[in-house]
Amino acid sequence: MAVDMREGGTRLEVLAAVASLERDRETPPRQKDITDLVSVTRGTVSKTCSTLVDEGQLLEDDGEYRVNEEMLLLIYKEHIESYLVRDSANNGFADLVEARNEIRLDLKGELRQLVADDEDGRRDLMVNILQEVLVYALSFREIQTLRDYLFAVDHLVRTLAAHVATNQNLDESDVAHSDALRLLLLVAVVLDRGYAMLARLRASHTDLEEFLPGEPPEDQMIRYLNP
Image: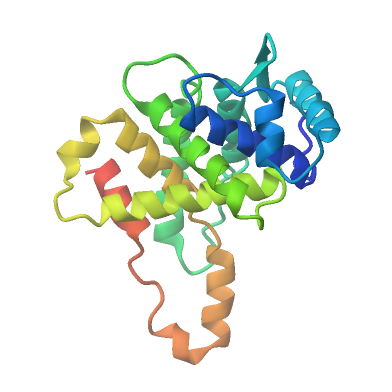
């Protein structure tokens, strides 16, 4: 997929503007509408829109623009696949790491169906998450590149999943009967990495040692996923 993750803020700003206008209007925006919302000239907007259409991130029809949801899903799917490499368990957190490695295997199968048209809510949930962060990026200028955007999506996924998994009203049957909830928890668990770094910090700081491992929300997610 020929997408430059490091490309600067103009492209992401235009993409975010289209997402915001799409959400707030009955008809897809035109270049004039986009220009009114962003910090660059109309000529730059025109050039950027053409580039985003060529790359498949925007869809254009008779001068109107829409965010290509399928392309966003494909880009995020590719991003998540980079997290599917198994962690080493030789770091003092063997049980935690192995449990997460098993979740990675489960998610591989789920990702193959993520971009398919489905009726179980998985696709809609991920599209809505991707769109929410894209609209947010328009006002939160620290999100400058597509890579920044994807990490911000990761953050929202983990935050959302943590709130859901720690809610007292949730139980195993809710997760078992909701493909969307299951996918959300699977992705959040896979994003939970860094145990080799935790092990080194624990070894270096005695004031941390007695408190690690703790019980992060991802542990509760795993119990819901594998009751």
